[in-house]
Image (cartoon, rainbow over all chains, first blue to last red; front, side, top):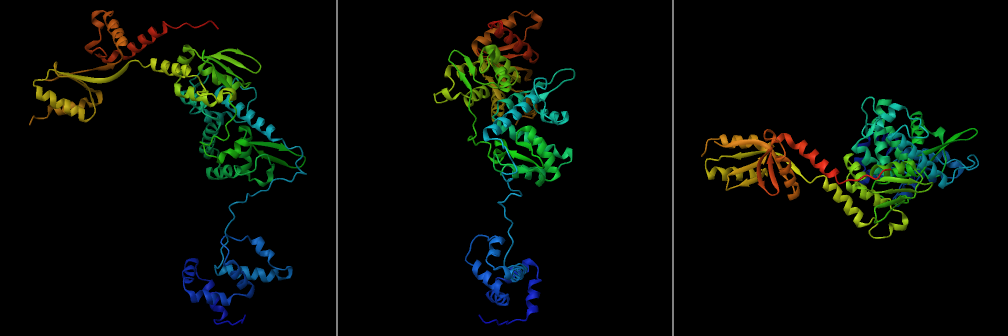
Length: 429
Length: 70
């Protein structure tokens, strides 16, 4: 190909020195493009022509492979020129993590996936137990009491000299499924991170990065920044990662909880196995050994026996009244029972017997048999027309509760009283 | 001139209405709280008795409960 240089070299330098926007605009013209192409070093020309027909970004590594070893300097010159002239852009790879999993010869005895699952579950339960009742947790997590208080902020209310009591939100929190609970805690953690001197955006990007790691693979701790290292310790307490110490290095292993972070809240693919069987005689059998489950069931049912692998209880009117006093709704209880149904009954339709669900709802409405609305009664109307006018006025605003045309009495909502008075005081047309 | 009375508008089912009427009748004359009995399911009462009515209904409800000794 003739090495004809139509324009002197320094003109191209001038072009290369233009600001990016102007340069891009310049490339709208066909002649400029051809001129630039002709001015490129031969290797750069070859690259441009090669990449013309490729749609996706080519990695720099593969471009290096096109060159023989002794042509590397020419390659560098060509690439630099192309970048200068903004013929090619550098696109940062969004798909690679800043770290690779550790090689297996260093990390001996990685925990199996089941072990990891058990570990995550244990940590999470311990954390939850400590959250709702610090005296019951067997092992305390290493969260400082101030961080625990922060988490407990919306869930527990503590008066002085009294043990903290679960609020209505606290109960609803316990009955939510694990993913929702995890997100709530993470949200609280992030929003209070500023008080601890950690930038929330760093934390958020680290957490999202974490969710893209492979489950069960070990990653070296020295690839983390200091901020991330502190965060990792907290996350280990929550059960999101497992820390392990080797002889020279230490590493962390993400668990299912971490990889589920990026999964949406409504994805139910990580549904854990249910454990509750509800019978038509209102008895409940929960095949579980977890203290947390026992606490949750105690919220709304009467626990009768606790055996090594089974919790036997009954759903009674008194236990449900207790739950309703504490702010739990019948819907929450019913959905908890349905979502955690034991696999043996899960295929049955309906999973929880209808007489039980109906009765739970009936007992709830039994508490609201009487509806009371603060209101005002108007009587002694001088004329029927005024009465009718007032009725229509109140009806317009949806505040009319009762009208009795025979006795000429009107009842409107309390909030409407002021407007009604003004209406009555207006001079009649 | 039109008379305005402040109070509470109660709507419930018939047995509850009768319960409230009974409660009213058992009060000494100075403490009767029903202003008007509107129909068999609606009553207009004085505003301060809301909590009292609720607690009496809860008491009535608890009379039917039996808690098995643990």
